[in-house]
Length: 136
Image (cartoon, rainbow, N blue to C red; front, side, top):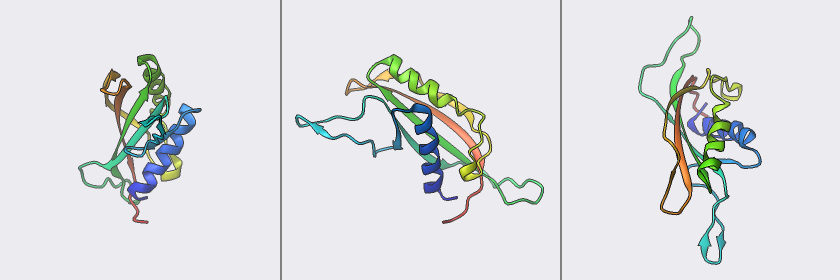
């Protein structure tokens, strides 16, 4: 699966966990103008998916697995809303994502939600996993 396919699969899985809110590609969070001010959703998750350094892993002659990193940036109007988003995303820990033949998602590191310059509380969690890379 390509990086794009990985991102789409993770956005779908995360959106299920944070319903009624949603996950978006980082930089693509909708922010319609209200009274001339860009207004993102009250709570959301923005993600990026990148390949990690390292050689492909081969297991018993099967196709190689590549290392991947999932970065989740979660946001809310309050620190507790941001923490709620993080808790919901954390439900995916140690789960496989069959849509991309991913091995279980593993926690790497995170930051406590902090208030940004726009008054939104955001935090970041990094995850790693292994999955095939198939150019599509």
